[in-house]
Length: 209
Ligand code: SAH
Image 1 (tube, rainbow, N blue to C red):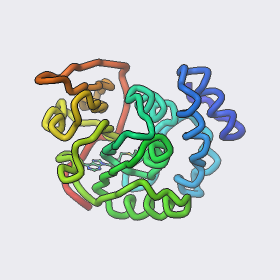
Image 2: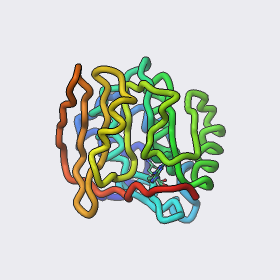
Image 3: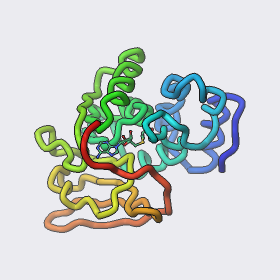
Image 4: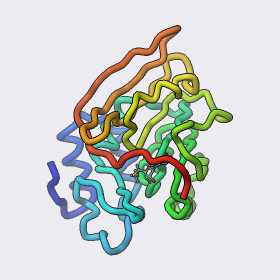
């Protein structure tokens, strides 16, 4: 699926044909120019449907997987979302166009500062970023309608279910070498689990730097 496209519109059209994504989601991504979230050295690869390096051993996510995770969360303009792993800020910015507010945690200060800078350039005002270990979530801003992990966690993050609203959804790549995209839905007194496809994310790491 990793075709390189001449321009961003062509990439978005390709993704539309691949994923049955709703138009609002595709528009939110189209209105988030990916080129502004990667280093100039990689600008020739920006319309590639793949992850790209953003420094510090991290990557900007594959556009397809961003759409896939956001679609599964059933977002709308009333929702409050917690994102774990701001990275380049690309997914954060797409999210900001779909929901009421995004809280985003990043453990690498330099990435967090850069993402904030780019989001300021784009006049994005409904995102709050924090330099923090996202493993613990962000309790003081909870509860959330959705929690999204941008890095793979080896164990099921059930400790974060308490930061979700009733019927809230948490989506995460779970596993070490072999990862699966899994969604947890908080029900009254129980948690429903839905397993989706195999994925390949950078690992969630502990501590700050
Ligand atoms: N969606 C982002 C993905 C970035 S890669 C994008 O498209 O740019 C995953 C990010 O998660 C990295 O920036 C990494 O530093 C961050 N991360 C890893 N472990 C973390 C943790 N424990 N807390 C917060 N962020 C973490």
